[in-house]
Image 1 (cartoon, helix red, strand yellow):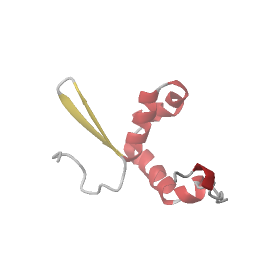
Image 2 (cartoon, rainbow, N blue to C red; image 1 turned 180 degrees about the vertical axis):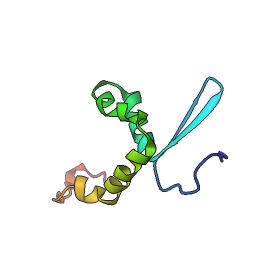
Image 3 (tube, helix red, strand yellow; image 1 turned 135 degrees about the horizontal axis):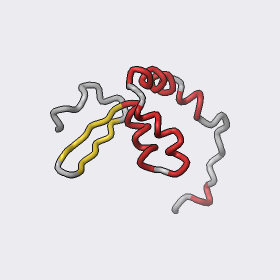
Image 4 (tube, rainbow, N blue to C red; image 1 turned 90 degrees about the vertical axis):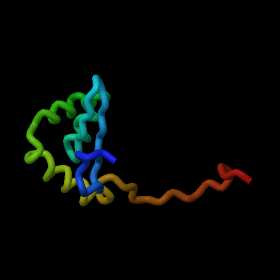
Length: 86
């Protein structure tokens, strides 16, 4: 396992390797770095990667705490049994 990994692995961790070096990014910075790498319209949000982590991490923790309320579907859809394998 990497020596520089944080002890708390309950957050998103981005491991990058290239040009003989390894870089580890965690939490909000990892999310924003992924958006930056994806490019296109995601880059509109990804630029915030360059802001300091102490500004970003509280927002990351807030969204993580309430993610099911924010993003979960309210209605459960019935199972379509015709799509199941015999």
